[in-house]
Length: 338
Image (cartoon, rainbow, N blue to C red; front, side, top):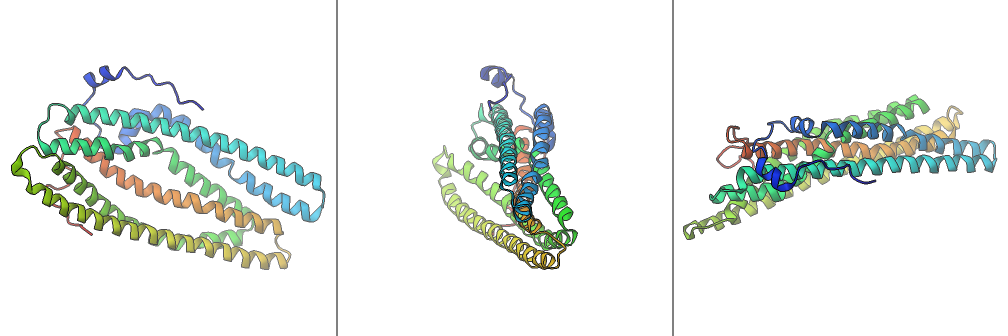
């Protein structure tokens, strides 16, 4: 798939006429600059998650038909249908990802031009130039990536979760209820650990900006700044390690919950098959469905984390491009260092 046609004016024209201010809210900026592209992204997203249950149902039918009818022609037909569904869903997802990337790159370009016009030209102060370097090189990148998927990503992951959960409940309501119950612990520890990561990310962004400003020294009397930057670098290291500890611990606990769901499916599903209340194909489809719940749930958690982080970064960028905007972070040092 080729990217949509770009109707932007020439770079020189844009740099000469670019608006130096940005909306204060991230989603306000998303809707202002890309709402026309968000609509087809939503349509592609809905198509992807609606097709998610087709492979699950075909797996169930292949197993049941092979056991009951023992007609290989039926198995061949169902496998061909499975391959066609996978090809269709994969093609739509490919188009969705390329379109998302195009929207995100377009947002990065516009944000960098806005930052350049506001802080990159005519500014001689070291801290202003350091802030501009940090924004153009580092901060704009994740914000632009997020903008490309700001609407379609949560819709996709939530749609997959809702579709697959509805399907497993359709197969067997008791097994579906048990699977949902095992999500409850994650709804408790994930927000708590995510909040801790968000606080540390906010402090890290502040420090990296200070480091960027300290790297641009034009006066020999500013040499002590290098000592301060060395201390800031150590602080960033400690903050990053705390973030990694929380992130990997959260992933570890989420994986444990997933394995608990599979064990539950084997125990409860095996018992219901022995009692004659469920076909073996239902157990196979159920386990496959649980595996399909892991990725969208993890991606949805990552999205919520990215949302919080990029809201902070976008407000920092908007504040730097709008002199009338209040500062997002305090002038002094942030309270959280580790």
